[in-house]
Image (cartoon, rainbow, N blue to C red; front, side, top):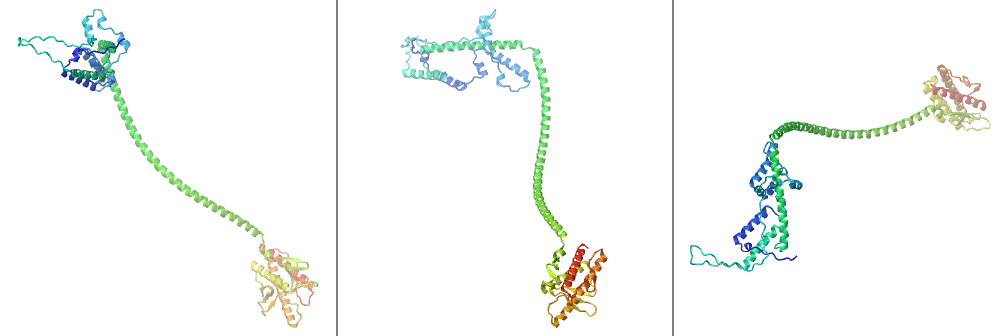
Length: 480
């Protein structure tokens, strides 16, 4: 297939400048209103249809009637509800006016507007029409001047301007070849036929809608609208009540949140106080456990001390062979065993201290005698009569001065024995106490307590009986 260059029609090549400007202005205004690849609104699409103005007005009234009936007031409706789109199957099935029986050619012409296809000349026109002009009536004798052909640059500028306008308004670049122009014309013709069928479909749909719209349907719709209004009012009232209830609940929620915040603060303060009290309680419990442990230890020590006899520990009376002992000190002398007089005197001092302690514990006062415990130099004082002082320590020397001293030592031991007898008699009056040896003057049992002119074994036995009597008195005194 050959591709011949497209030749412009002579009417386009010889356009006046004003005509070219008018075409450019119209193209520019159309470009501003409906740019390329911009969606076309239904109103613009309706305006672009090649249909009589009466049909367009009828279609607009048919579209406006249901909207006014439904709304009942001048409320704006969405743009998508202002027109009806028909499917291609519906459009193709709708017959035109010319196909109906009795249809006239006039109805077919009213349904469609004829369009003129652009004329394309395949011939190259290189010459212009040089036919002489007809003389005018005013000047029959003078012929008209021949038209002056515009310069070629002017034709090229106009042609380029037209090509630019075509390229801007379509998806193709101009100029086109003859074959491309034929294909384009065929496509535009097909599109025109489809647009005509779509227009006929909308017109038929409008006619059906106008024919089917009855008074009963309108009244029913109006009643339904009134019912919907009542329902809307009821729903609005319920909405107002719900909003009031929501506001009340919001206030209650705020109050509850405030109370919750106060409770949280009180709870935090409570836990702070609780923790402080817990720490104080733990410290107090630890102190209490310490005190109780100390108390238990002290109670155990007290029980041990209660079971112990202090007097027995302070005055331990026993024996060492034939000798009676007090705190480990032997009291007496025998042949063959040389007991130092210092030990004997110390033992007498312990014995006198024990007798004095027992008398003070039981509250007993001796008659005519007062005990003066002074260790190894103890003595007994007579408080009645001559108020003599009897020494309770002796010596083994045999000179005349010592003989007088030993005599006072014997009187002191006899005075000690008398004091022992007095407290024994007092103990027997308090409770039944058994003493194995009786005391009569200077004797305890059958042994004399005097040292001078006496055997050492007898004197030692008498001293042993004295210590035994003191031990029995000590036991009695600790139980009183």
